Length: 198
Image (cartoon, rainbow, N blue to C red; front, side):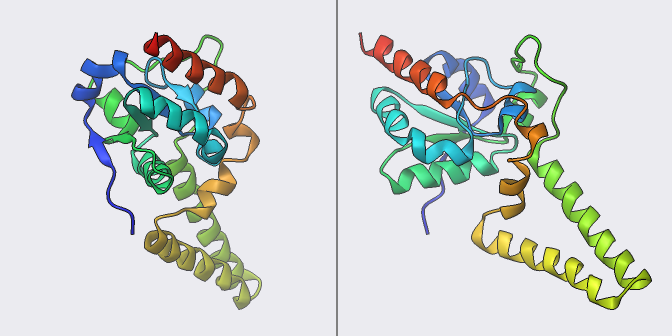
């Protein structure tokens, strides 16, 4: 198993924000609802495609990965580490950043706030469990297998430190109010470390 990623706390990040390359791995919808100033949005499912540019950015300075709670960004750090790229994660994510009184940037004209992915997963899982139990009581007992499947999914998720439900929910339209313009983001990432190198 890959080692635990290096974690930076909010006050430390605030003092070094100008020298860090901050990459937010949340969905575009979550990113638009509020992110660290200067952060670039590279959703978790686009990380592999962005790997060469992230590797180059890491060669020119420290890279900080961010998500809502720190769980997805820690997972992203482990993914990058497998390819020899070192990055840190923000302890507690944007939730801790805002709770500590630091400002989140929200683009002008951004859509209404999207629930954090963890909250969406809890809601969806709870709804599916209740649906399975209700249909099992009212229609046919076999519907209770839906609830058992969700419970099994949670066990698998905990053992593997992955979340298939989050991957599926991340593709829904409300989590992607605009397509992640990865090419523009990668161009901005390249420009940052080119400017820093000059």
